[in-house]
Image 1 (cartoon, rainbow over the protein chains, first blue to last red):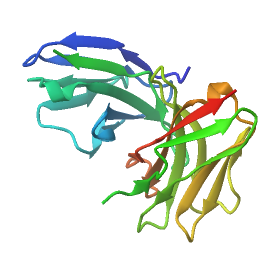
Image 2 (cartoon, chains in turn purple, orange; image 1 turned 90 degrees about the vertical axis):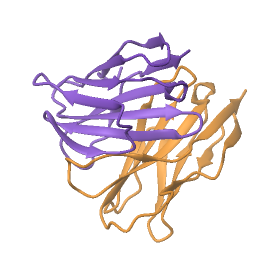
Image 3 (cartoon, one colour; image 1 turned 90 degrees about the horizontal axis):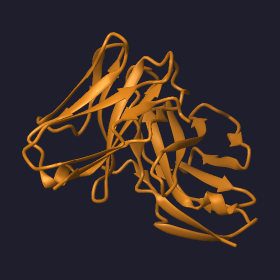
Length: 113
Length: 117
């Protein structure tokens, strides 16, 4: 158990819809990262938050947005969903220090029908 | 430009033998970190081992060790005494820079390891 909690584990929805993925980081971790894993793109970094502020952005579509709340949990919002958005979405958290590994949640598997 | 390269799409090993999974990287930073993760068929990502660019000794964690050759920009994972439960996808990843607030990981494409009994 990594200590990072992601909900829901599975999500099935239709094109054009909007979904929210939720992540609770490990206790004490201030950094939260979102990654997308798909067969064609592999593991891609989407966005990072540190103590409530956005710190880095990767290959995140404009239809996607995220935020980190005062209690440090984070949400990833995906809107106007397309078939190509089907993927495994991971949240990870890490502690202070460059040598601290990122601990991943079990992921949310999103299927667009 | 691809920064992490794992050239072995798949590897096979006999149970109880050692196996090396290759990883090469590219960066202009002097300070960086290298990580290996395991992803079983169930999908979760499990952290295995870390090597810092300034670490003089190769990292070890139980049956996992990292063969770090800085001049060659390689960070190969060695798994000793393979077990059936080691069958999984293995990812090499790099974090550039020292700022803790900028810590995204760049992943390789992964290597599928199959352990035969």
